[in-house]
Amino acid sequence: MNNKERKFWRYGIGVLFAMVICMVLSVSNNAFAAEANVIESGDYSAEGSNVTWSLVSNGVDTYKLIFSGNGDMCEERILVENHDSAPWAGYVNSITEIEIKEGITNIGNNVFSCLEKLKKVSIASSVTRIEGRAFQQCTSLKTIKLPDGLTYIGWSAFNSCSKLNNVKIPDSVTQIDEYAFSDCAGLKKIILSKNLLEISEGLFFASHNLKTVKIPARVTKIGELAFSGKFKSMVIPDKVTEIGADAFGGCAQLSKITIGKNVRTIGKWAFYQTNIKSVNIKTTKLRKIGKGAFRDMHWDAITFKIAGNKKQRKATIKLLKKKSVGYEKGAWIFK
Image (cartoon, rainbow, N blue to C red; front, side, top):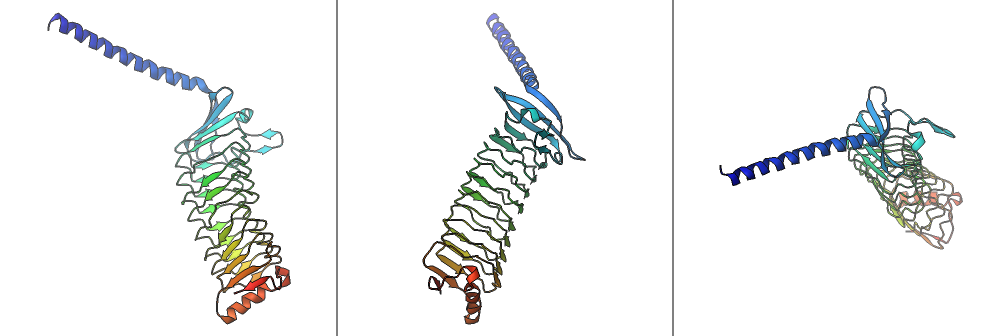
């Protein structure tokens, strides 16, 4: 090996050595920086689980809350008046981001309620349940991606998330409890799970700007006060047997409704103060229409298309012609 080759070899070894040293230092510095950024941490495990939380700085006076481990979170965060049981209570006005890592299986009751600066949420695919009031009154949260393995969304889970505007519920979800998306003033579109079995009480109550929503075909019941919004038409699927009281009451832009083949009961005030001018009643099993169900529908003439044979049609029309239901002689047309 001549001098030139030896110099080149030494140069190459030197460069490689320097690169290795830089890599080691970079990893060490990153690890140190990550550790240095941790403000507080601790345990947040339900019985039989191993869940930890850590609070890290992610900007000037803003923080990220991270959950790691395996299993369920604590049963419930207590948040009443001036008492907050969360170990991160001193930072609730500065938490802007949440990360729930793989291995966590639920999001606990009330756990992120009233984090009014929260803007970004990352939820691992291992999470199967979002418990009651989990994100209630997170007023800066605009979007959230729900994992495909999710099966359950609890009571008032996203209540009063006023900027939440577009939500897709994965098809793995079979149950959404009462008032889960109520009072979401910014909510304009929601895609519901194809496997949802019930539209629960108050699900979209006071979410007055909802424009796009479709009831899935497997739903069997629509609860009281279920809907608010600006949608103009609605199809009640054929598996639905009951429409609850005030289910669509006050949906002022609703002008066309199709009632499925198996509806037996329409609750009181169900379509009160809507703009309905066309009602397609496919069911021949209707047995009860509650007080005021079709009252004050804002149109001079309303057309009811009634399904069935002569006897079945007569029975349905008899129910509709009750004054208590809202019948207006001369204004209602039966076909």
